[in-house]
Amino acid sequence: MTQPIPSPLQKLHGKVAIVTGAASGIGAVTARHFADHGALAVVIADVQDAKGREVAASIGSHRCTYVHCDVTDKDQVKSLVEFTVKHYGSLDVMYSNAGIPSASAQTVLELDLSGYDRVMEVNARGMAACVKHAARAMLEKGVKGSIVCTASFLADCGSESVTDYTMSKHAVLGLVRSASLQLAPLGVRVNCVSPSFVGTPMVAETFKIGAEELKEMMAAVYIGRDGPLMEKHVADAVVFLASEDSAFVTGHNLVVDGGLGIKSLSLLKP
Ligand SMILES: NC(=O)c1ccc[n+]([C@@H]2O[C@H](COP(=O)([O-])OP(=O)(O)OC[C@H]3O[C@@H](n4cnc5c(N)ncnc54)[C@H](O)[C@@H]3O)[C@@H](O)[C@H]2O)c1
Image 1 (cartoon, rainbow, N blue to C red):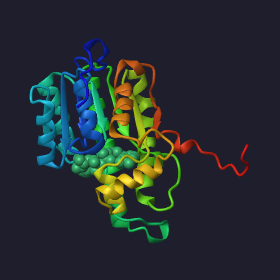
Image 2 (cartoon, rainbow, N blue to C red):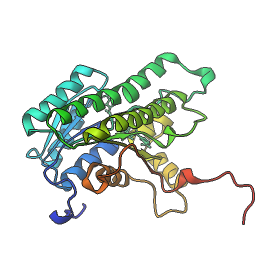
Image 3 (cartoon, protein in one colour):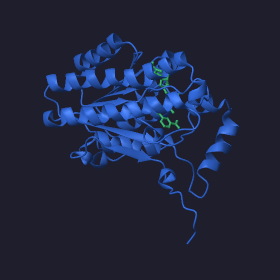
Image 4 (cartoon, helix red, strand yellow):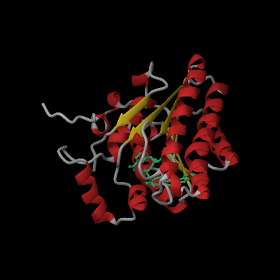
């Protein structure tokens, strides 16, 4: 049980936010963190209805609502944004986070193009629909809003085994960089957060492992640190990007990986 955040330290006081992919993992923890940071309303969107409703109820029905939204359906994304503006008056923050893993490990030689289509449909096209409709709603209401997308540590490097997923996350980076450039003069900021491995159901699904193996894998990945990267670390970064603390930050890819990606190819030890 975490301690409540005292109100002077709350960074999203009075803000209206949407979090997609919030029935599970990083999205669920971030939705709760938004509420803890004083958000007036957090609308959580997902395709896992029972889990999504459970998360919303646990945050509190006075400030959190669940809406079914498949981000691959542009009309559902538009309705999600319209619902939010109609019920809460505006949209200040869009955290576009919904994503899926590769169906299986693959090099480009084994790339299954229907699997590729599906990953791109959710991770790239779905993300674009969320950014588009959120930005439109913000501009219509004259809101100086913040849009944050979840990319990945794989958004800026190659992968030996998940070609389609890596491509989809590179697309998120292209979306964030283009949208931020286009929307900066209009007062809307667009950034992304790029976590390395977090022990969520997605990672368990990718590696086809259970809870115990997942724990062991995470401990091995983050060996030498205080512990593994947790959803809360990512949520803290998202709150920063969503809040006025990052008022002059746009087009940024905030990597949250405990330094894993900074390793140089060094053959000589000092
Ligand atoms: N876990 C990691 O190690 C990691 C690392 C880097 C990036 N990410 C990214 O973080 C984001 C969240 O992943 P997570 O690890 O919390 O996984 P997760 O599986 O726990 O959560 C993803 C959520 O997205 C939802 N979702 C999937 N398809 C959807 C759709 N079409 N419409 C709406 N919702 C949909 C799922 O139902 C689920 O609730 C994803 O974009 C993922 O690519 C995760």
